[in-house]
Image 1 (tube, rainbow, N blue to C red):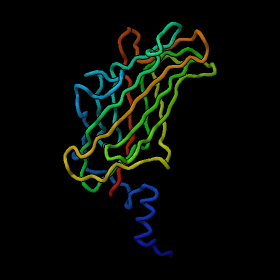
Image 2: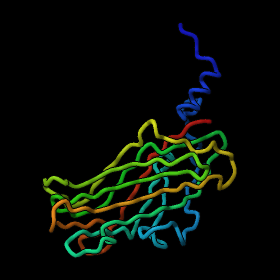
Image 3: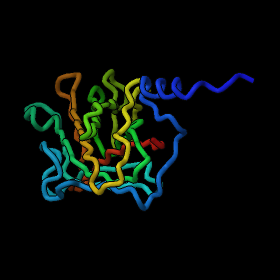
Image 4: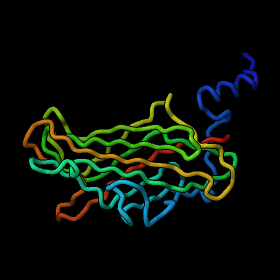
Length: 222
């Protein structure tokens, strides 16, 4: 049987690859919370006005969902550029116990859209930690820029963070409010052919339809 790698080598590899030195493990759910740092001003950008953004975390603490109630986009002849794209950078305070860390491995976007053929909705999610460990991103698109049948209804589209770019949060200190996470959400509608139209985030009755941005989280010991 081959001998186990020396401890020093294991630690060096974990630092180079940004991987915790021990196996993946999820902390006790009751010790993990995500909350807006300022609920009345949840972030910056036209996509998250006051009281229009709400976060929630799954029972197993592996899926963080941001729900946007006023994230509506339109593209058609004569529509202003500002109506075709919106963004929001939300700030969330995270509490998690000492000896644990987490990272974003991917994201899923879910919402309602009506897109003509040749109209594409592009999604960009960005994620950074207040500890300065870097920022990672996820890209996704819905619609068919080359024609096709277009889209009329609900969609779910996801993407993964490249394995070489996944960044671990600072190791938990056990202090309350020990980390701030910045979550960026940007959505744009693009008509590849003049005269095509589309909208995102609008219900059949003209009322806003919620857009969800889900972060897929991986936990580990540290």
